[in-house]
Image (cartoon, one colour):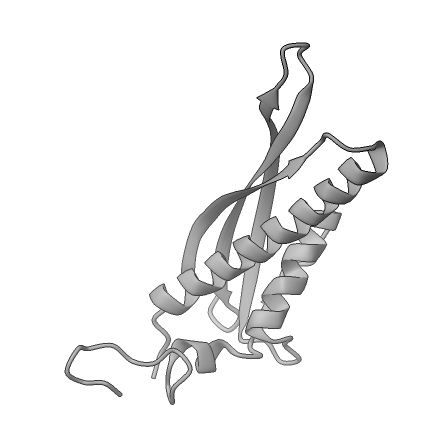
Length: 147
């Protein structure tokens, strides 16, 4: 422990990362996007066989046109995503942490239909990875677990 500054390493002994690893069950996905988000969260938090915490995540995404030509064709899109989360203790049912994360990715729509669909799919994957990183970081920074 680095006592001079008051911070503890997340993955150190007794750190939040170590305490949550393999002990969080993430809510079941119901869309392709939530499947990707859950997959990324499980990679960061570990899959739980004996969960001490339930992580309920609600995801919303929205498409926004970003570049429009003079002939009114959209050539670039952004996908904005927001994930609201609540971490609950399985034992007590108490809320341990809650919050939300929000970010966006973009993709080009100037190629063929196949190119545009592939770009959109890649942008969705990147967005779910970014949201999972942000959510995990918030959990590690804010959750106060019993010692």
